[in-house]
Amino acid sequence: MVDDLTVEEAAAALGTTPQTVRTLLRKGELQGRKQPWGSRFVWIPSRKGVDDFLAENGRLDGRRRRRTGSVAGVGDGDTVGAITVATAVQAPPVGSADQPQELPLPAELPEAVGPISDGRRRPFFLRARGRAVVFLVVVGVPLLAVYVAAHFFTDALWFDELGQLDVFGRAIRAKAELYIIAGGLATFVVGANLAAAVTRTKIAWTRWPTAAVVVFSVVLGTYFASSASGHWRGFVLWRHRQEFGATDPLHGKDIGFFVFTLPFERVVAQYLLVLLAVAALASALVYWGRGAITLRPLRVAHEAQVHGAVLGAAFLLAVAWKLRLERYTLELGQGSSEGGYSFAGASYVDARVRSPGFAALAIFALLLAFACVALPRAARSYGRSPIVVVGALAALLCFGIVLVSAWLPALVQRYAVDPNPLLSERPFLAASISSTRKSLGLDQVDLQSYSPTGTFRPEDIPGIHERLARVTVWDSSLIQSRMRQLVTETPYYEPEEPTYDLIRVDGIVG
Image 1 (cartoon, one colour):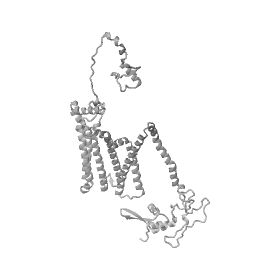
Image 2 (tube, helix red, strand yellow; image 1 turned 60 degrees about the vertical axis):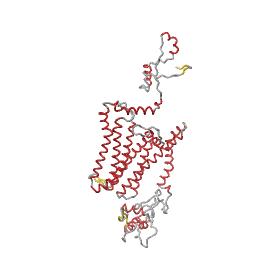
Image 3 (cartoon, one colour; image 1 turned 135 degrees about the vertical axis):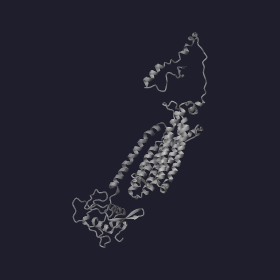
Image 4 (tube, helix red, strand yellow; image 1 turned 180 degrees about the vertical axis):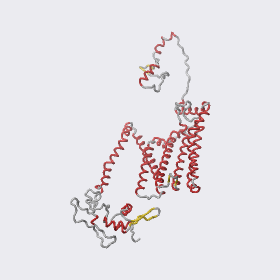
């Protein structure tokens, strides 16, 4: 249209930047209109709006627009002693031949007004933002460095005193690696899902949505990184994993898998489950805010369905991996003092019920993940029935996890094992005893029975008096009373069952 200008033409007429022109249009301080452009819109300033703005405010000449009749003193952040008296200026229309090059100022000014600015900007470090940046660099960075140094200085001194400073350095490197990997992955996953949700809901990528996505992703990434860095010991063991050369009797896995690999893989699986759940929740909030997801009535737009199906499939894959790892975790169970028949290792119920149940649930979770991928297309073709079916299958998976992990084992234990526990648990108890002996090195100990054959007659006592003088007199009641004086309960030792030891005193063994 003839009465329309481009943003660049309006910026040249007003003496400012195109970004400032768009801001003035968005705030309604400059007349214009919106024009669709693809999935977004652009601003079109009007010639009359530019003329009215110049008549009221004059040219900006690179400065921010000030209020009518305002006077900025020497302490302003952008100009020194700048004066804006817009009511005294009447600018001709844009494109007029007699447009003045300089704006006239009032003949008389108040005495309190300082010298008029010549348009030169103050140095960056003298402006408000510059002073803040200088303060952060000069004060904040050294304080942060001191805090970090104080946090590690004590531990470094202790390791250095032991002559193991290189061990401390390797631990710090492992923590840093895990922090960067976990934090970077969390930031990427959350940021990618938020960006997909923003794009699918047709939110314009202006300054604030971009800043919100970046800040939220970085904050969550920092949280996940801090939580993951606490598992650095498991990370180091996994990275330097070795084989023991012996296998477990239930799954045939090398013992090194249970020592080095399994603990860290369980942490990673839990990390992925929480990360995917947080990413799904953040994306759902974006869709809900844009109306793609409504609760009353319950409605989910196709874009949100596709996004949720991908996240749901990834979550189910992580659940399947977690269930697979739980099978191997059963062999790490320890006996409880409250359980009358419990012992270390897998029991009859673990081997016959929980382990095959977890394997079946892992396969079911994999199939359900593939069903989630096909859900959006099926929902568009056949209505809401596929969503109901997949929801029912997910509920069935949750019910199966509760059934396999708690209810069914309790029933089998009560009616199949407890009537004759020795018969049911004999092979698993033997495997537990054998593994315990091997782990403690007791399988190499030779056993020899000792049966004393010598006897003493009454007339032999005076002759062996010197030997009997070195025999320890063990008064268990006296020792137990003394031990109870030292501590609340008698720890470690039982005075009723003495443990003898040989020591040498003055050359005599006693």
